[in-house]
Length: 170
Image (cartoon, rainbow, N blue to C red; front, side, top):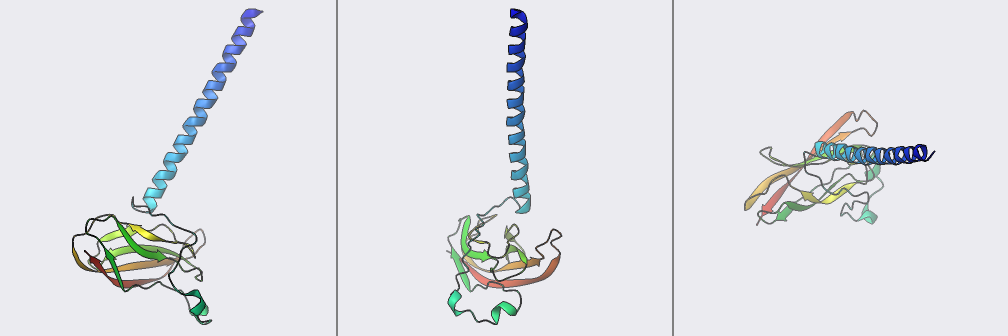
């Protein structure tokens, strides 16, 4: 009788250990898959996308016409950063009044891609852009290329727009 009890306890302990090992393995596998998907969506450069993105615009001065005039695209004049920095302080996002999603690509006029975002839903954006490379001192012609897509599963392409600006690297 003692031998049978001992066997049952040992089998129970081994079963619990196996179940725990499978659970921990599943957790790390799922975490690894999610990390790979995140990197694939943003070319390995991930910024902190915020749901309460601030456009930097005075919301009280908006006309009632603006919400019915189509897709709103943020515009830029000049942005500055230090040579060698890997972050650019620029507000890239999708105004909450839009009815479509954005993929935003920050690039130099020569086509050099500095950042490509994940899908930005209306009201989502980021203000610190992690760059894929550093830049040397100088003034660059840059742009944010916005690719608009539907918000359904298909994410069908809509229109696109470029917002050009001067990027000054000190």
